[in-house]
Amino acid sequence: MSSNLALNPVLFENQVSEKASEVKEAREKLILLREKTGISYDHISKSINYVYSKTALNQFANDKFTGDNLRLARSIKPILEKKEDSLGLSGNSCFCFTGNAQKSWTVLQICDQDRDMGLIEGDAGAGKTEAAREYRRQEISPALITCDITRRMVGQILGAIIEELEIGVRVGTHAYYLGKIIKTLKDNPRLLIFDECGFLSWESIEAIRVIHDTAHVGVVFVGQTRFYEQMRGSRRSYLYDQIVSRIGCRVHLGAIEKKDVRMICDAICPTGLDKESLEFLYSKARGTGKFRVMVKILRRAIKIAEREKVAVNLATLREANSLLLL
Image 1 (cartoon, rainbow, N blue to C red):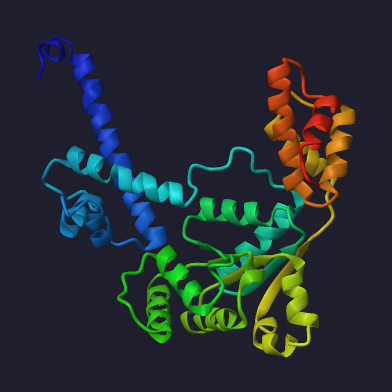
Image 2 (cartoon, helix red, strand yellow):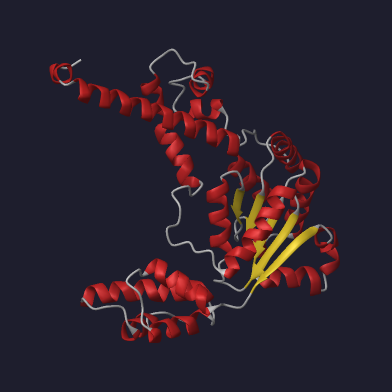
């Protein structure tokens, strides 16, 4: 103990309290992440180059570790924080429970709790992805897989699920990967959310159906309306009969309400906007790109206003709008 601490017992007590809080916080985060994501002690141990064994981590989580708890807590802190970042646990300060967000939330909750299959579809920019990300942030356990041109075929999707669930696997066949995923989800059920699902091949959708049926976990497809139309109205719609019959809840995100526009604008621009500015942004939210375009315009207008040292108004909004392609 330093001489300063010896002379100042209050300061010493404060430092002891801070260290105890640091250890407690790390322990609580470790327990929560394991409960929600199924991350193993072995995985964490490997991430810190086996400085602490999985046994030591287990003892730490159960408050039975006899070594330096503070040193262990500080060793795993970066790993826990990285995991939190990947899950989006830092949050979205501008997320708003708009009408579309509430509709999406209903589907996500039903499929999560009842282990059902659902579909959230609508135009680009209507808030589908933001709602899915916020639900995953708040609930932690759901696995969010974003599909794209490089993540659409069955092997790519199975690999993405394995990566999201952090399953240790060797190189193997699709059947091997599928079996690993099913076993993991049976042991630790988690909602699977597939964003941009319009990219998925029919084979990938069938593999997801097998996971849903066999592991008995909830699945939510999130994408544009054409995905639904493809299942219901295309010449190959018969291929999707197994999926359509399993979808227990579906929501279409369509109309944009003025109150939602004001809610988002107030969150992004707390100083407020005049009536003309709100009307302009409302017209943009109703057009191509919906909320996404509206938010881009508003954020850019704020930067323009800051540069010109003026309040955000119709003029700055129009200048920001002129910079977009839409």
